[in-house]
Image (cartoon, rainbow, N blue to C red; front, side, top):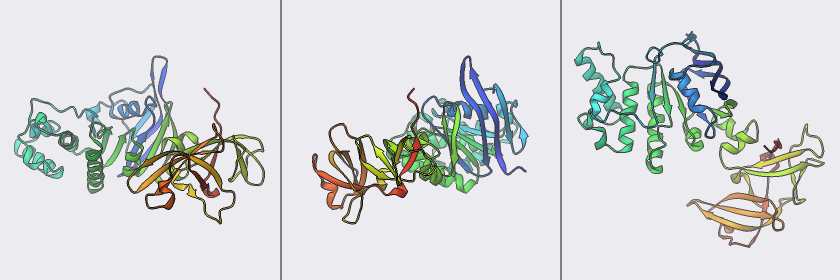
Length: 357
């Protein structure tokens, strides 16, 4: 058996003149949870539909456990899929919806046992005779998941399954989904536009832009060591400060302020984007050399933390966001107050400035 449950090899899809998926190469390890993320129109949903067999690729191949399934019918791929809309049959009971995913030749008693097992698995054992309209959004999502799992697929495909839920329920079901996937050990590929969701659920995140893969890696690698400015800005909050490379391990911001950074391999005067996460910026202390000063222009309270937006220098200067604990002495800084901040050099990442479109 291949170590990869699924392999995409040079996968492309054209719709007329539009290249929706462009030469995708991706290995999905057996038993892993992989999230495809990216902005709207990046090709992530098209890629999922190609894997499912709902679209035919223009080029490339799809292998499942080393076997080419590129031209196989969707029902012959050993996949289960949960759609964004859940696609439940409103005229059927919950039990009948789950049973619909089972082979027609399966004996009735065996079907009933399998349905009962799955409804117990997703916490809906008492809802078998209900109709979808009688269920909450979260319960409908669980029914759709049980139906997708019914035939025992090798791979589970999820198309933004939590996007229609309110934030509190989404967080709850996110935890349930991760626990269920780990319990079953089923290889799972999920499309999501929610970066926090991907960071919380995935073993691997595949970031897409313009039909291409920008980076594939663990959540820690994607967040902490992004391959480029696009990945850095898409995954998690990020300060992006236009700058030019200076001397002695420094870059110069647009307002003339200097910050320390690793400039290895960059030519003096090169245009760069200096990036740093808001949670990596610190309120400067007496021992912080090279601290920057700015005025608070916005303050957002988030319970345990406060996000301050600070304009560095004069009007029109760059704006820096930083997160401080709600109990920090400067967390109560009001609009217009001057705050000194420190940007640790090991937390500043430089990327070549991309040309404007």
